[in-house]
Length: 432
Image (tube, rainbow, N blue to C red):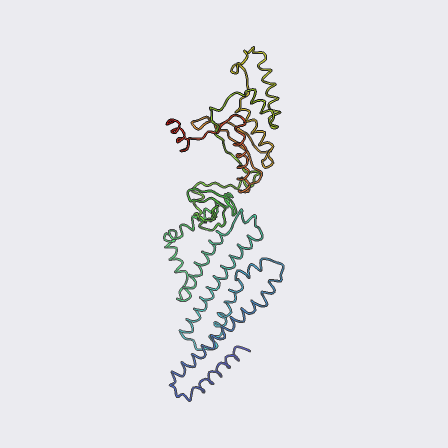
């Protein structure tokens, strides 16, 4: 049907309504207002019908086509509501096209309604762009998971959305007020100082996200530690203004993104990507328990399989060294002799070298730290092959459980400060 034919149909409907209202003996103005009101209701119903038809097509035909396709991106666009929001154009377009047909006379009311409909279309456009940008982020994270972890784009998308909403709101206001957007935009330029203050965090966050992305400082899934903010866990989200960290106690810490540029933080990604996770822990040995090996203790230690090769080689070297020194019998000081601490260190070194859960191809050693008031620390420096937290802690605990249990076999004692029970025992001995 042509626009002229449709217009004649509306005139016929208007004439029919006037004839129906004749028996009510209404005034001309009242009758015209009532006719215009009925036509407005019909116009709104047609717009609602257009909206319903559009949504029905999307829910039935379009949804089936999308679900049956082999692509993923169209499913994401549908789930994010891009097509559903596009259907919002149908009632707006229907109203914009039908208003001149239902109300051919041009008046300030019809012109204002047209401006409202254009503003409505601008709002729908903002929502469609918003959904589309969210879909782009989801498609990016779905189709390139590793790249999305290294270089998330959510912060940039949020920046674009802010720009879209600012432009859209300006166009809506200027359209409704029937003024040029140039005046408002020039006013925004004059208010740039205020805008910089209002959007300070967003601007700082945008610049910081560029630096983080360019330098590959943090990714989604990284384990970071930032004691200043109480953060110690995995990064689960990176936005324009903040980074969310799920701590190991399952709490969520939100950190301003610019804080990762201005403050220091630990990123454990290097450990995760390496072949092992470092164990660096020390046993404090009571220095008063350190002594030369007696023949009885040496005989007992020879039965330990991990020490047999070490003791055989050491005894041979010591015997050759001491042979030319003409030592007195029982002189343990002038020549070389085995100590229980040195032998224990050799045992620990052999034990960690053959441990199935430790990386033999990475740095591993047993060393003495500086003696102090808490004894002499014997530090283990090695790498666990399994980086999972629970397994790592279990391996570390097993190693030190074993070492604490075998210490007495070497005649050594762990240094431990006196407890209340020790002090009570001393007091009781004095009383007795």
